[in-house]
Amino acid sequence: MPPTEYARSSPTSECKVLNAKKGVITKMKILIINGPNLNLLGLREPDIYGRRSLSDLEVICTDAVSGTGTDLAFFQSNHEGAIVDKIQSAYGVFDGIIINPAAYTHTSVAILDALKAVCIPTVEVHLSDISSRESFRQFSYISLYAEKTICGRGFDGYTEAIAYLTEKYGKH
Image (cartoon, rainbow, N blue to C red):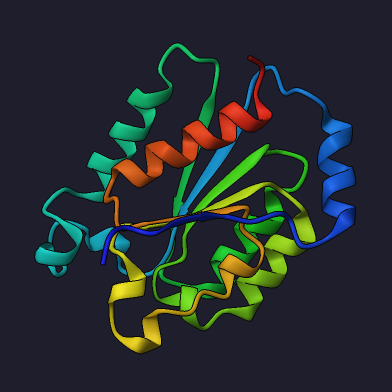
């Protein structure tokens, strides 16, 4: 099955109104959140996730915004509550979120609720194509809020997510 990409609208009119009031953002700040076991990129199932590390991913993302005026911050945790706390602390600080919730994709209503609460435009990213994996990996709670989901594009999915957010919300 080919990589999956599909776009959605924010689920609430309140978020649309809040984000419209921000107008065009001249210097975007994007938070990139990686969930459980992504700290083991390069070691864990390299046939699925590749041989490059989380540090390599951060360099690729940083290089993608070099000279653009976009600031990135990175966060990785194996703990659901820490991810929820980070999302909540992003309110009023970040203009966009890119999240790979990893295993929490399929289980975490708490992460979904945190994203809905802060109303920050969000892109969900998965290194592998979750639609072609085990059946329990095919449903994403995060997709119920995320404006866009990018699956199966490896590290390129993150740079595509950055481009999406900066093109849609940044200064042109």
